[in-house]
Structure formats: C-alpha cells, structure tokens
Amino acid sequence: MLQSTRFLWLLIALLLGLNLVTLGSIWLAPALEKESKTFRPPHILMERLEWSEEQTQAFEAARARHWEGLSIYRQQEIALRKELFSNLKSQDTLKVAQITRELGQLRGIHEQQLFAHFQELRTICKGDQVKEFDSLMEEMASIIGMPPPHHRGPGPKGPPHHRPGDGPPR
Image (cartoon, rainbow, N blue to C red; front, top):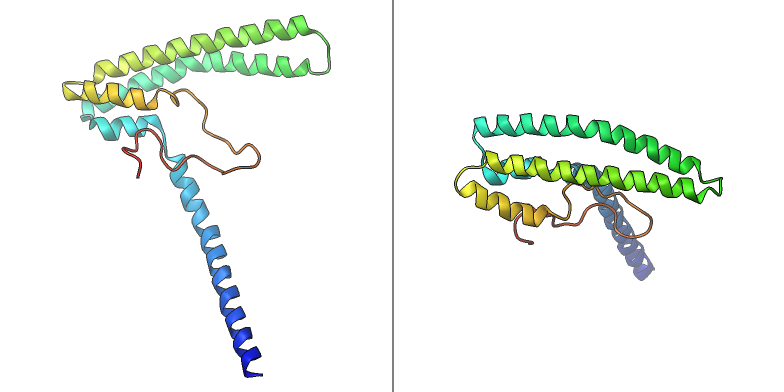
C-alpha cells in the first residue's frame, strides 16, 4: 500500500511537471512568434549601419518611393495570378503559358527595381558604413524580396533560429 501511494504521488508530480511545460510553451509561443515577425531588413539596416537621423530620413523616403513603385506591379501580379488560377478548369495550355510568361516578366521588373532600390540605399551610407552595407547585402541576398516563410505542412514551424543580419550563429 505504501509503495502504491508513493507511485501515485510520483505519477502526479510527473503529470504536473508535464502540464507546466505544456502551459509554458503555449504562453511563450505568442512572444516567440511576435519576435520572429520583427525580422525585417529595414530594422537590420538601421541597427547594423547606425545611421544618423538624416540618413534614416533619406532611407525612409527611398523606402516609400520603392513601395509606391512596386504597388502598381503588385496589383498587376495579383490580377494575373487570379486569371491563371481561373484557368485550372480549362485545358488552355497556351493561355496558361502566356500568363506565366507575363508573371515572369513582372517578377523580372520587380527584381530590377529591388536592385536599384538597394543601389540607392548604398549611396546613403558614408565611410565604413559602405563596407558594412556590402557585407550585410551578402548575408541577406538570399532573403531580400522574398515573402516571409509560411508553415507548409509537416516540419518545423516558423523561421530558423539564425537569420542573416543577426550576427554569427550562436
């Protein structure tokens, strides 16, 4: 009887511990999710380059012009995607090929504008900031202009623990 009571208390303690771990992960998940959403190249640029107030204002103006210019192409891209997926039921492969070609051209224009935008941002830098900017661009080249990662089925959810611009991996 004493041994079964000890076993029950041990089981209760184990279950309580598991519940605390589960609740902790549930409570911490929104905080971790919020932290991962704060990753944005503009934040990294401003932090790593330590821009002056004047440089920050120039950056914000360049960024606003960049997004304004992209919005026209983004609207065209959305319209083309809708048209593309409206053709799922049809067998019109020529129409699908035409739409995907147009989407590819728009993507090319987007990439050219993105490159020009970062060329402009480079001109905002002064002295050692240019070297740091170039180094940062090498780190971020694979993610600039890409949509944020989304959970796509089985596997880990969310971004990797180390992202470019965070400094060396821990």
